[in-house]
Image 1 (cartoon, one colour):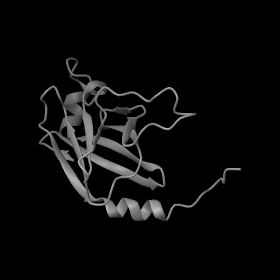
Image 2 (cartoon, rainbow, N blue to C red):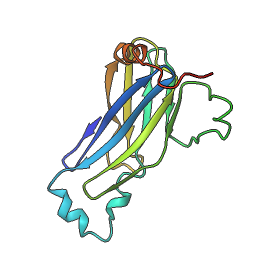
Image 3 (tube, rainbow, N blue to C red):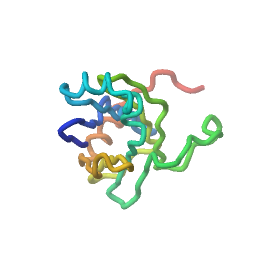
Length: 149
């Protein structure tokens, strides 16, 4: 998604299901940054990526974003209206950071863009685009593990 002289941000571990996508937003510092960040009391590594936000842009013009949204409390009994992007936790060390994400609902056919930005201005918005047919084909091959009764 983004790469500077000091950091790289990637989408990893993408899995498609009939109801949506699971993936991780992963950030890695340049190897030269490891020792410097580990000893910088003014910039603890655990806060390096906390303000990073992600937006997904779909071929039909809809978007889903991690900005100021929370998982609805009724998710166990009522599904959120798609597209709904949710991130559940994050963690890491001076060697990197990872945040699992879930997109409720599948993207429509066409381009699917992943856009990230640090609002504090550390990095400008950047991203990558994939063909959503890859995701839709994978979701179509998903097998039910535990059938509902």
